[in-house]
Amino acid sequence: MMQKDRRGDGFWGSWSVRFAATVLLVMAVLALFAPWLGTVDPVQLDPSVRLSGPSAEHWLGTDALGRDLYSRIVYGARVSFMVGFGVLVLAVVFGGLFGCLAGYFRTLDTIIMRIMDGIMAIPGILLAIALVAVSGASLGTVLIAIAIPEIPRMTRLVRGVILSVRNEPYVEAALTVGTPTRVILSRHMFPNTFAPLIVQGTYVFASAVLLEAILSFLGAGIPPEVPSWGNIIAEGRTYFQLVPGLVLYTGLFLSVTILSINMLGDALRDALDPKLASRI
Image 1: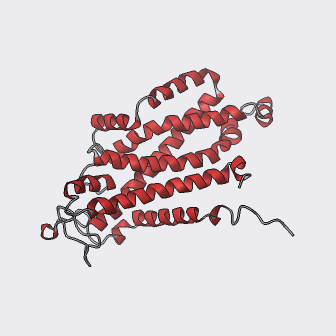
Image 2: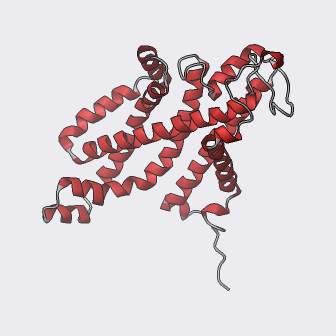
C-alpha cells in the first residue's frame, strides 16, 4: 500500500487557512463594495435615533450623533485595507531596494544598515505619532508614518537573502560572462526573496491595520470625520456603559481581521519553508 500523504490536502487542507481566507475575503468584499453594502451614508447625522440599538434600518445601532454603526464599520474596513495594502507596497518596494543594495554592494552595506538600525531604535508608534504631528493627519501621512518603521525589517530580510545567494555558482557564472548588475539583482537574486517577502508581508499588513487603529484611537491618525475602526472605538468609549456595541462590534471586526491575517501568514510560512514542510 502506498503511504498516505501526511500533509493532507496541502495548503488549503487546514481549517485555519480556510477560516482565515474566508474572513479576509468577506472583509475585502466589504471594503471594495462599501458604497453598495452600507445601509445608509456613514456620515449622515440623525439625532432622533442617537445611541439606539439594532433595528431594521440600523443593523448594529447608531452612535452618539445618530450615524449608522454598521455602515461606518463597513467603510472602516475600506480604510483599514487601504492602509494595510499601501504600507505593504511601500515596505516591499523600499525595503527590497535597500536590502538588495546593502546585500550586494559591500561599500553601501554599513551605511544603509546603520540608518536602518537607527530607525528601528525608535518605537514605531512614537515615530508614527511624531510624523503625523508634524505633517498633519491625513491618509497619506498615516501611510508614510506606518510604513517607515516597517522598511528596516524588510531591508534586513532582503539583505539576508541576498547575502546567502551572492556567492552561489549561478551568480558567479553571471558575473563571469559580464551580466549587468541590475540584471543579476533583478533576475538571479531578488526572486529568491519572494517566499520570505510574502510571509513577512502578511505580518506587515496586520501590523499596519492595528497601528492605524491605535493612531486613530489616540487622535493622531485618520481625521475624526473619516469612518475608521480606530475613530469609531475612540468615539464609542465615552458611551461604553450605555451602548457597549459601539466598541465591541468594531473591536470584533478589527480583532478577527488581524487574527485571520496572522493565521494566513503562519500557514504561508509553513508552506513556503522547506524545512517546516518536511516535518508535516
